[in-house]
Amino acid sequence: MSNMILKKEQLIPGQTSKLVIDAPHIAAKAEPGSFIILRVCEHGERIPLTIADTDREKGTITIVYLVLGKSTALLEELNEGDSILDLCGPLGRPTHISSGGTVICVGGGTGIAAMHHIAKGHHNAGNHVVAIIGARNKELLLFENELKAFAPEVLVSTDDGSYGHKGLVTDLLRRRLEQDNNVIEVVAVGPVPMMEAVAATTRPFGVKTTVSLNSIMVDGIGMCGACRVTVGNETRFACVDGPEFDGHQVDFAELRQRLNAFRPLERESYDHHCRCKCHESK
Ligand code: NAD
Ligand code: FES
Image (cartoon, rainbow, N blue to C red; front, side, top):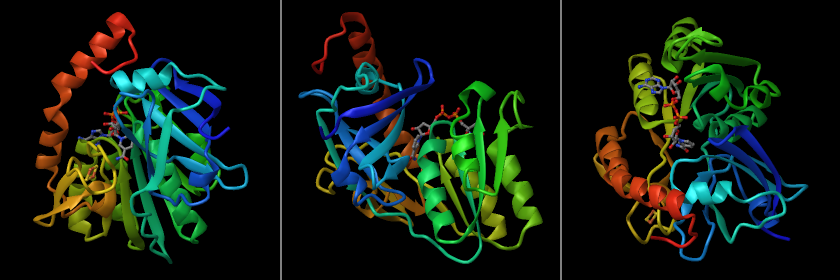
């Protein structure tokens, strides 16, 4: 049955899960960089999630989410055999795949899973993929083996030094750029401060830098304006013009402000859900 969860894996128990979903209509058209919007219950919020992988033959898509608010907490309550109420996609513009060189794909935290599909696209186009992945500690690191399956270089950092380089992904990125003049593009997916720091790191090297923006989205088709971002002093909609943009042109301060605007309401809604476990929106 379409939208059924075929496989659920708790990557970080209670915090991050991976779902393989039966969605042949989406798997057939999804490209690296595509995202979906899903709804868990009838009056629920629409959650945008970047597709982490697809299998066209099996007709499945893979998503990875961080349990952050009420909607992802509701999603986390679903198990194998359950179906997701609505699944809309694939949405957004696919990743522009440059060819003929080294592409460094940087992923932070749960952003690593979303970066995986983009990195695979670059690998399939014949690029030499260097994956740089970082998490706060070893337990929070995702998709290392999945990336090693095709990327010839996977460099790891943890903030506390429990695995790989002790420090941030940008330390590894700077070092790699200093050693290599053949990097044609850097792609970054992760928390906004990380993507901003990646763009600041690549700027002196003059390397094309693409970031995948996790804006707040409602309709996902360019009508509501919820996902607007400023790129190169122009207003763009992440859902239809992105979600990938030139990292050197993004107004990150505005993006941070817009993402933070709804934090108190999200917190209130999540706390309410945890207290009463009701499935309808507050
Ligand atoms: P996190 O805050 O634990 O950071 C993960 C890693 O990113 C860190 O270990 C570090 O290496 C790097 N990093 C973070 N801040 C940095 C900075 N200022 N400078 C340099 N490097 C920095 O990540 P988390 O808590 O797992 O959060 C993941 C975030 O990714 C969420 O905010 C989520 O919304 C976002 N995300 C985005 C997408 C997307 O498509 N853009 C997809 C999935 C997740
Ligand atoms: Fe509504 Fe992009 S989510 S315009």
